[in-house]
Image (cartoon, rainbow, N blue to C red; front, side):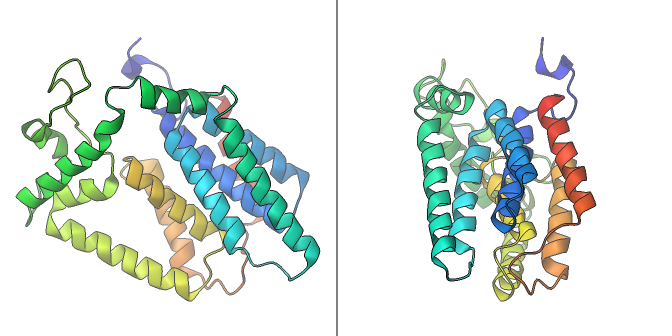
Length: 276
């Protein structure tokens, strides 16, 4: 059955579900570092399962990277017990990564397929180069909003591992920042640079280790690997996280959502994983 004709509870693309589950993993990993309640561990395992079921390589890389960052940047009281606990968590996280690539599982299978069998796995770099070429060729005004796919065929590149040299046309740049640059030209580049300048200024003037900041950076990292920010759901999530980061004064290391919001988000994440 074609994917467009299949029924989907939430997202058509399972990678989107993996990204949401990845946000859930980071959220409850953060809460576990703050207060080690059993329910946080349970929700973390549920969302980690969602990442593996989705087979999203980007989501997996993101949760590993930002989990390490959370551990390394988190400020603990200077006690032997706390230092030992942090080392133990680092060891567990490293062990999880190693076991992921040793024990058969969906993430391992997807990495293996991409590296060994997918003829287009390494073409993403060429797609990014193609997107930069579109940007430089239409430097001042770009090709127009949502017109990337309209001009992509004219910039198609040779694919040495596919069934034909120009068999597949990349109709999306697989990078939200390159999409904005290609479609908006120089104005898009200025918007991106201004956004990250003011965001970095705000983050480094407050605290890097808090839920909103980490989830926002995780989402922006995913936008570098996949086109997600122009999806209405992720755009709303982006605005929500930006509001928390830019408007609230984060004077302490840990700032938590209200209990009611935690439970609401938890049920939403379980809904995404199990009711697909």
